[in-house]
Length: 403
Ligand SMILES: *[C@@H]1O[C@H](CO)[C@@H](O)[C@H](O)[C@H]1NC(C)=O
Ligand SMILES: *[C@@H]1O[C@H](CO)[C@@H](O)[C@H](O)[C@H]1NC(C)=O
Ligand SMILES: *[C@@H]1O[C@H](CO)[C@@H](O)[C@H](O)[C@H]1NC(C)=O
Ligand SMILES: *[C@@H]1O[C@H](CO)[C@@H](O)[C@H](O)[C@H]1NC(C)=O
Ligand SMILES: *[C@@H]1O[C@H](CO)[C@@H](O)[C@H](O)[C@H]1NC(C)=O
Ligand SMILES: *[C@@H]1O[C@H](CO)[C@@H](O)[C@H](O)[C@H]1NC(C)=O
Ligand SMILES: *[C@@H]1O[C@H](CO)[C@@H](O)[C@H](O)[C@H]1NC(C)=O
Image 1 (cartoon, rainbow, N blue to C red):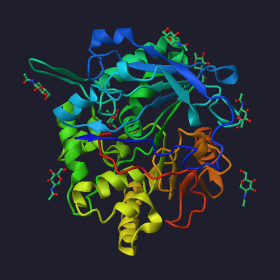
Image 2 (cartoon, protein in one colour):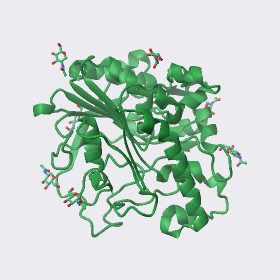
Image 3 (spheres, rainbow, N blue to C red):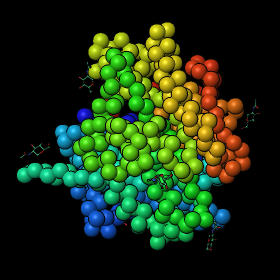
Image 4 (cartoon, protein in one colour):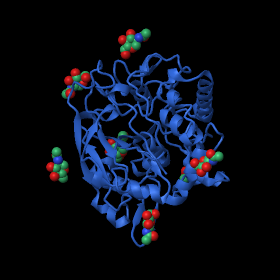
């Protein structure tokens, strides 16, 4: 099964013709392949070379580095990984070579006041396991490379001599499956950088919960266990976490790994994350009659029982985050109540006039205040439907965990 993560926020003229999507020039950044990756077997699912997109910093940001993991679901069995290997999710051969840099990646100071002049890198996702696997499958006709961990290492080693190794400030970010990747590489990232550098990590929509679905089935837990097994992930999870749990593979879930991470973290997530709502809480396998179809497309169409279920999900997420909220002095949070998935990658949700806000603060301001220690920022929104700033969002289509 492939868990798919479609783009949640599209500023589509057809959806919102009254909104002006982007007047300014879009920044397109060219792809760089990593030829040295082949030596360490750090290949995409189909055996193609991994890649990133780098836009150079300038001025005061010339020694600062922002790395962003691309997201896009996971594949947890041979069939779905085999299918994925033939798409842009599993092969750089099928990826767009020019990538739009928007939101936290844009170089426009008006739209991205704190990071616009940093070196900004997008790490392309082609392993299907949030950059954590290390295994190979071979039979007579097919080879599948489960090499996410090695891809991460190969890209880092490619970037270190280009200036990353002398970074003064650095931020490791990512959304969705890419947000999950930050949890597994944050401390590792810090170790590669100078000891006097400021290193922090940001997960956007990556706080996937170990939550039962509405039929009380552990759909997500089963999915993760098979993913960890197939792609040889367990050896790459945080040792202190795997030592502490009876089921070490559960350390793939951020809620178990988080307390073992020492690098400062910012957790950005909607408490009603649309992707988790559609695939973890109410997967189609748990709603065969389609009673949730209207509610999935439009929260205003949910019954009061369905809203209660969603409020329960929110409380479980806040519960899972509570130890972090209470104990992490250097941590930041922005847990809002928009039906969203990924809010740092598009200008419309990152730092626009009508972007989501908590206490009148946009996500860009919250993350910037936290990164530069201008202000403590641990914001938890009031429960749906009280937030009036949830614009620029369209519901995900009912997807699958594997996109
Ligand atoms: C930066 O964004 C602002 C606000 O959208 C826009 O007015 C300006 O033209 C943009 N600058 C560039 C160089 O694209
Ligand atoms: C992107 O990079 C490739 C390989 O270096 C080059 O052939 C191509 O012209 C570049 N495209 C643009 C638009 O810069
Ligand atoms: C090899 O594995 C792939 C993926 O599971 C499968 O589709 C194919 O039939 C297998 N080939 C052989 C010869 O077993
Ligand atoms: C870290 O130390 C190096 C070597 O002493 C120095 O060149 C660099 O400016 C320092 N970086 C920061 C952020 O202080
Ligand atoms: C529970 O979820 C697993 C994994 O998706 C699935 O194989 C199983 O059939 C489900 N069981 C029920 C009772 O829905
Ligand atoms: C595990 O915890 C010990 C003691 O706190 C620490 O020194 C070590 O770096 C940790 N290991 C990992 C992989 O985080
Ligand atoms: C919210 O912030 C904007 C600037 O981002 C400001 O213009 C506005 O007055 C603020 N509103 C309130 C109620 O403080």
